[in-house]
Length: 263
Image 1 (cartoon, rainbow, N blue to C red):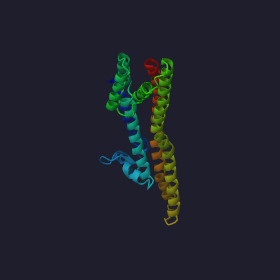
Image 2 (cartoon, rainbow, N blue to C red):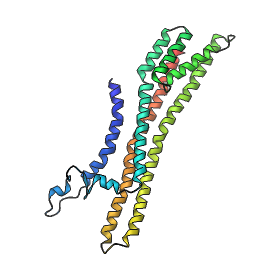
Image 3 (cartoon, rainbow, N blue to C red):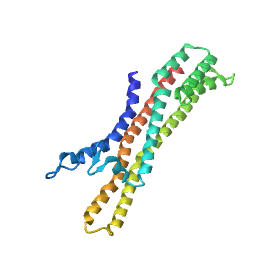
Image 4 (cartoon, rainbow, N blue to C red):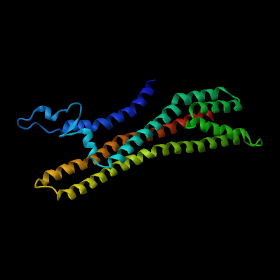
């Protein structure tokens, strides 16, 4: 139960970092009091978070059209993270695989072993790696030629187990690849939004009055929102990708240990 809570808290932690970082930045970067200005000028206006003289969500909106793909990218990354955590924890959990292995070792009839494996796959889904590998090994044994010796059958089972293991680990690796794409694309989209914002600021500066410096600084200030958003998305999901990649390696080691016991 403790492990379940730990794994479920990980995506919540990333979500908290994702949403809390801009808010913390807002509090840190709020302008200091000047002269007779009231302290409330730098605090919340009602329930709205202020960054400078703009509410937080209004500032995000000022990032322009590039905020839309960035928001979609963040939602996609949250979805893929949750999906992969479910696959590792609930479809390939240590306790489930250990229970299946114990049941297989206690049953000596290979036909009944096949039924146990099929029942486990039905219960925990097709993404459970260890049952799929066991099924391939058992099928290889049951469908083997009667003229084969016991040593040849065992060798064929091991080959089937190893080959299916490579396929399963490859599928898991492909499952976390989209997160690597998010980590790469999010900062680039943020930078692209900043470039567009800078171009727009310089284009509009010519039509403004004498205070062009203030206008330009405000335009740059808003244009940098997309870069900050892109980095805010990329950094937490980089750690998520590294953690999931480590889980794949750990699963591979576990499958090797289970395979030696089973075969």
